[in-house]
Amino acid sequence: MRWKSTVGAVILAGGAALAFGSLAWSPALFPSGDGPAYIGEPVAAAPQVEFETIRGTRESLADYRGQVVLLNIWGTWCPPCVREIPHLVEVQEVIGPRGGTVIGLAVESGSAGDIQRFWTERLELEPAYPLWMGRNRDAQRHFEAFGLPNTLIIDRDGLIRARFLGMVTRELLLEEVEPYL
Image (cartoon, rainbow, N blue to C red; front, side):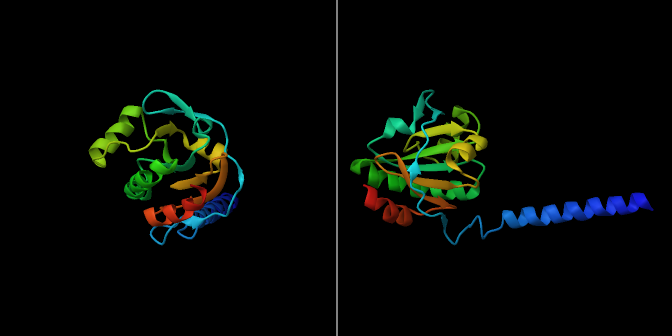
């Protein structure tokens, strides 16, 4: 009898953990369609870490000091990330001439060749902005990106001014980035 009660307690604890886990990943925290969650105005210096690019070089946000950067943390395996890429391409077209750039940090998305093929074959586009490669744990550690897509607005001085969790649209990004251009 004692064994059955222990098994029952383990099953109950596992069920509670599963229920909490599904709550933590609920649409309230990770919106999909109603727009992104605006996560305050976290005025903090962007970390000066380097990432490998799909071109085989290494870059850091410090390389973009003096520009406004929209850092988009995404994955090829993330449906909302894929849906927002055309919006980001359009944003790049608008902010590029004004001293801004989008940077895409692809996490857990394979090799440089995999990411390039994703753009050319699945999206039928050439990459329109710099693409970096990283790991999910690096995005979490350096940018507090605990969900995807995750987009940060970084001003010309290298300060993170805003963060969005969930899919962003062209209209929203252009409105939010305007004060920093």
